[in-house]
Image 1: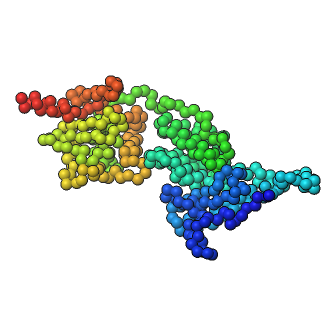
Image 2: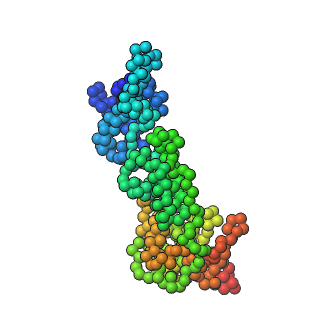
Image 3: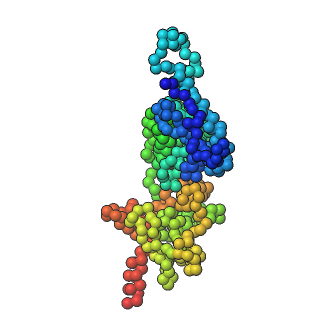
Length: 407
């Protein structure tokens, strides 16, 4: 029996009353976004490769999704009707007369339908990206990093395009002329290339592109940055004066820089401090680092120098809840607050001169500028030591000094 597309079979069972459609008919909500969802007739499910067809509508508003779903539904119905027409043009048991008729050249339209029988309905990269991000569970940082990688590709393409536009030749041009020439670090370039490869791999698994087609595979990016030219070095005093001169426009930039200079703590550790992480004893501030990059990084620092002590006293409030951030100006939204601050710090260094950012590593360079009296080399897990000294005084060392002074 020849399979035919049945409009009634494609309808969702969600109805309010007879003759009245539900507002969410053909709609499905994934995450915060709305999608069109149409059931595929059983006779065509083998060719489509799924029981339903789902398409992103590119909106989080229900009323807007209702308005957009009709044009998307018309495209899906035309696609299913095309599959039915291909099946009708190829009978299973042809009669002699049918054989004679089919010996004639097949019209070009039928050839196109046969070639696209295993493809999904046409969709552009913007909507596919949103659908990919909604269907994958990842960290918030990874979510925005993938968006950033696609935005740069989108700018190179000149706008929203269908995935078939990105050929292997175009991908090679993008990698050679844009990605490799960007000011990003080698690890950032590899991450962006990996994100694009994962995006195309997801599209291939959902048949938005042909299976196995991934123009971002096979590239090799350098793991070293030729611009570095050598190992990291400490800041010169003249460079520190340039960094701390002027009035930064980013909130709390100067204060976090001062704390990093005198404590050696990482940017994310300082930006994550809360009111409860600060404890006072006489004129010393004890800073508890609870969120650190490594397990061994969780520690308590004793801050004695008057400059960081003044910064902490100006920020600390006894009446505020212990869970309140020490730097509330560093708002979330987008990247985590430490990454937003790192971008502002990088912009400041670039604005003060190329020599300040050519060597990179704010924490490694800043803490090497401290005097020998405040330097120390903490032991990491496994007995290894960092290749640069980290300033600051541990809480135990302060207690020993006070014990000797009292005796």
